[in-house]
Length: 138
Image (cartoon, rainbow, N blue to C red; front, side, top):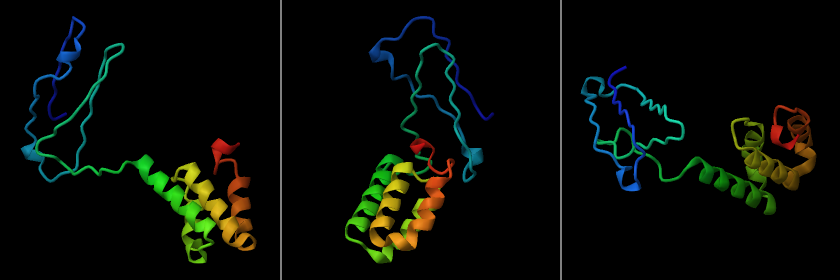
């Protein structure tokens, strides 16, 4: 543990009190090294917020993972709708990638069946036939 900040709060907070004072941690000794921040809240219905890290330790993308999944899903749908044959290898990788959102994988599978069903039926059968590949569909 590098540093800690503790607050023993006896009274419920008002909304205006939610933003607390700055809590400074001098992390200069670890500059350039990989690390993480762990925040714990031991209250019954508490919530913790962290913001305005100064200086910013790493830029945060304005695009979240849910939005990226939506883009991938839409791209697969468009490839299937317009039967973009050159996208088959990418779509096959998407279907086989267990880490991708299941909606993205299903859209990629649908696109493959639209583009070249005969060429892709084996992959689709393998993916949908295995319960661990699409647990939300079972």
